[in-house]
Length: 355
Image (cartoon, rainbow, N blue to C red; front, top):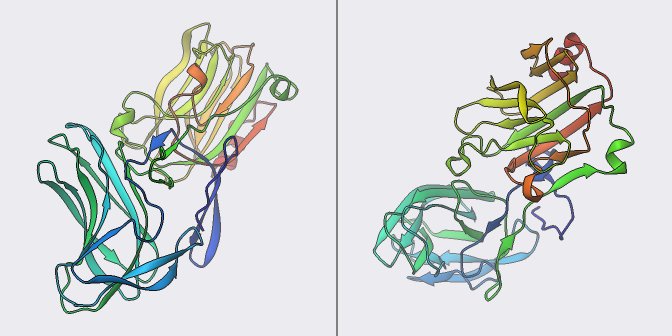
């Protein structure tokens, strides 16, 4: 079930897979805005060509939603969700929508820019379970009148469809669901998670330690994040510039790689280098001590050094973002485990920990 969270409330995410509920961990995302006019209520998805509301279904958020029923069983009927705002030429957008049928059938899932007739489409293979379909495209022309459309392409089938959660974002991927009420701004703020002050200094060992993290990034190669290195965590002096810090991040400029670094007094003393990831879920351990550091990922020793100065004024750990400017370079993914050890674990321990 999809739920929304209040301001300053952490979002712990789950998914239903293979008959079981699986915990994905803490969800960290950058801010976003849903550009559709509205995605609330049963009748905000306009209908054409003999589609009527005939029965109730339960939406992914647990509320009732009216199904739309094609009585004709012919090609032609379609559903619209409008996005009448300025969408700029050259910008990348992603539309998403949850769809479900009482039977399985195919439909066209499309963005229609009515201003110039620009269209982008994909096939949605609808089943009897709720699925989220996405479509990413880059506009050639600026649009001011647009719609997200589901078009019944298959003929001779009496089709019943449920539709929910339409979303259009100025991004190269879809972020989590954002309610959009007509007349209100359908935006979600950034996720800024960190530990500092006494809550940090009470347990952090300034001379040595190990950070273990298990995480999944949902946008490893996001073109919008090029060169940003979306942080998984940053242990730092909290000066806003990462001059004294160590961190790991995704590298959006290189496929399947993880970037790591230690900075001392504004100078890189370990890294920046990239470690090959090649895992959907990354298990990483970063062990630090003066002249004795190592980074291990999924059982592999990616890097180590016996000639590294270690910063000794650490004051915070930012989780899923960089501390500069109150948090930037967001992970856009899930952190299922983050564990700190106040000692430099051995390389063998690091390998066993991350297998």
